[in-house]
Length: 437
Image (cartoon, rainbow, N blue to C red; front, side, top):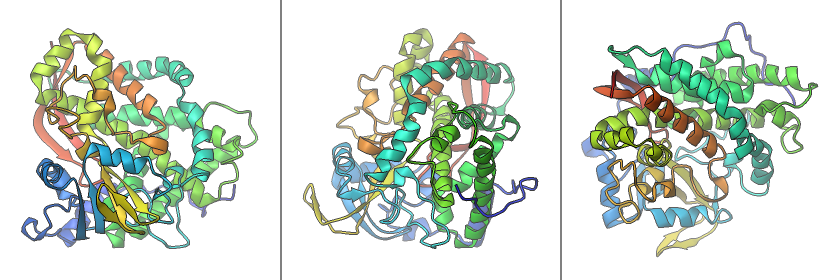
């Protein structure tokens, strides 16, 4: 594989974080005032950072489950807000494209600078998507999950045993980030002492709002080039070695991925890092915050740990760590009476479909014994369903099991800060205090 631009790996940029850079940008460029915004333009980041997204989605589900927004923050697009039409769109990948050449997978339009393209298999159509997905899929089989379970449990035990009791701390930093970056380091065979770089790169790579802040583009590119250079060094160190179970080795020994160009290599790194970091991280934060919002359900779980596997699915549904995925129509198509035109941007709001009352009664509530919790769409549907879903479920299940062993009750204090974005849905900070039950 060719190398990415030369970067001094002894002088990596680790400040500011993407969040800090965006905060400073928004001070210089205030968002549209609420009164001037289209109420159904649910791509506005403040709806999520202020936790105001439920109302507009509920209105759309009731009045116009499929509707078109014109002149939104990210241009014109179709809102798809209920369960059935999202499944329908996902089931037609030859009509509704994921390919970055047509628009990619997020509501933000990709940067078509020919010198900075980051192809990744989730943003590819068949047949190329099929071959690359098959390359990494063996890392997430039931056999591999069984192999990794002992190590995940050991890491979870260590993290929970280090938590302070009876004093306030940030659950996101101490638990959610620590566990997910640790898991990513294991998956990639990544140097343990540098594992927090994975979180740093994930935030710079996965924040849709950075597409709005055009004057941060060059800084983002530099940081992603640093990521690419670091991983290229890992690749070169292993290229002549015997195959191992880590993802880099799997790519090296795959006919579909061993000859990737540097940008495609970086693109797939972004996919695996963001997919493995943001989704599980924010669901783990949802465990602490969500169960704290519904103490009766939390008590039900504490009294009956057999409900843990179902609770995992329910919290993934309730949190929905990635709010949306985008497709682009390759041809005119009638979508339940709505005339989608070739080239139209179609945005599937998983966060709304997982609140569809026709599928999930009392959908805004966590119900640890919800019978159909597993039907959630948080991992997507069809050929692009999250390849790492089993691993995410395993990590969250083990977290709940180890909390139960310690009779650990996590009590949010009310102080928190949410991600300011319409794609990643979660928390930057979540202050909590531990008590026994």
